[in-house]
Structure formats: structure tokens, C-alpha cells
Length: 172
Image (cartoon, rainbow, N blue to C red; front, side, top):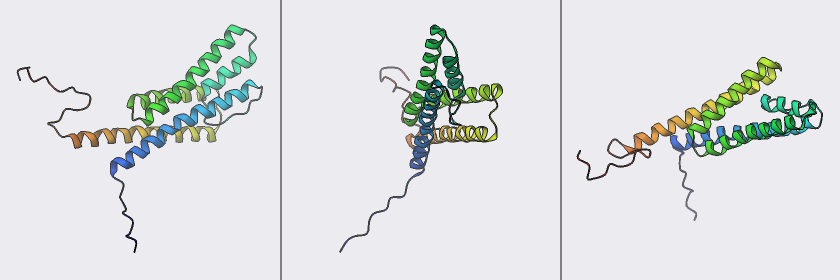
């Protein structure tokens, strides 16, 4: 006779950790779709994904249309840098780095505002970018909730992870 399986209910911390990992995954999607769009644009087409970064697309267009090798190299280096920042934000964001989420979100917000001011693409692209920004903000909020939960669990007498314990020879 088999015993029934033990079901463990997920905790609030488990929910927030899943939310953080899921939200950090958006950085990877943005970087990959931007990279594919840049590659396609370098081949001479104007096709691309709605979620690709506008700055990378503009740099790819400059690379494709300019004859100066120096400009092509600088634009390609900037494109690779921007995409690497998004990948790093995904990597460190999935490891619960609030700084990574903040930097990635700021880069995406600035890119979105600049891109839509320069090249309005229509409602579907705007809605898709708004949805991705909403998901990233949700990840940042889940990260803050996780931090608050860990502070509650530590209690007031225990040192926090970012505060070293006081030496015992210091008068108190």
C-alpha cells in the first residue's frame, strides 16, 4: 500500500523568488530579440521584433548605411555593449540583484522613451514595451518583498548580511 504524496505548499518567499526569476528572464528576451533584429537589419531588411531595443536598431541602421569603417566599428561596439548590459541584468537580476533590475529597467525606459520620440511605431509596439516594463517593475517589487521578508526573519538582534558583526573588544 502506497502512502499519499506529501504536498508542500509554496511559501510567500517562493512566490516572490519565482516572480523575480520570471521577470529577470525579460532581460534575456529583450537582448536576444534585439540581437536577432540587429542581425536582420544588417542584412538590409527593415523587419524586426516589437520588443527589440530601439537604440540597437538605430545603431544597426547606421552600420548598414555608412561607408566609414570607424563609424561601423563604434556602432557595432555600442550595440554589443547595450545587448551585454541587458544579458548581465538578466543574469544578476535572477540572482536577486536590485541594482541589476534598476539599471536594466532604467536602460529600457530611456531606450523606449527615446525610441518612441524619434520613431513612433504604433500602438502594438508601445503596448508590448509597456507590458515588458510592467513585468520588470513586478520583479523589482517582488525583490523588495523578498528583502522585507528576510529582514523580518532575521529579527532585530541578528546582524543583517550587509552589516558585519561588531568586534567584541569595542566598548559598547
